Length: 188
Image (cartoon, rainbow, N blue to C red):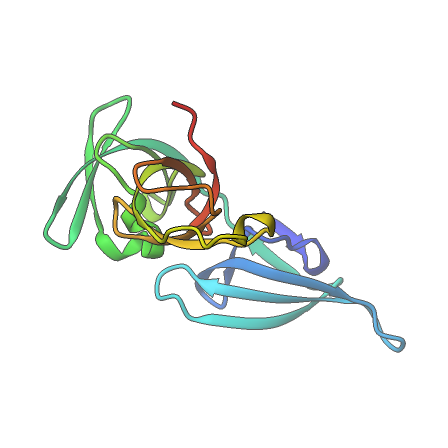
């Protein structure tokens, strides 16, 4: 579907110059002279290159409709990950690097959303929050608890995050998978 240049929003997937791009940043600009435009930063879905473009309000661009399917992660096979469709039990194999920095948060049996464009998988979305155990953290320095300071901690999946001083080894914490950041202490 065609949309005008000033209607582009973060998260939109566009078919532009023969490639698929996901919009990562937009800025609406109204200069003193001339017409308003939308400064758009996009990332190529397939190879990760970035592009900055300026779209005027009279320009149109093709917004791509993606199919979202629920899958369950089964196992890792070499450089690939195997997922199973939750309704028809069909299995697909995707490249390990499709997840990028979120890969350590993928666990056996996890439900994920896979976005497909013309039956071609282009992205995997994990749940926004996951629970992991802190396996190692530094002791609290006396007087440090009064301020809103954070200390480094190692999670059971090997990811380092910053946690509040009251979190100790053995505590379970909720982590935001998009930002790889601490959200709260997990409720047992």
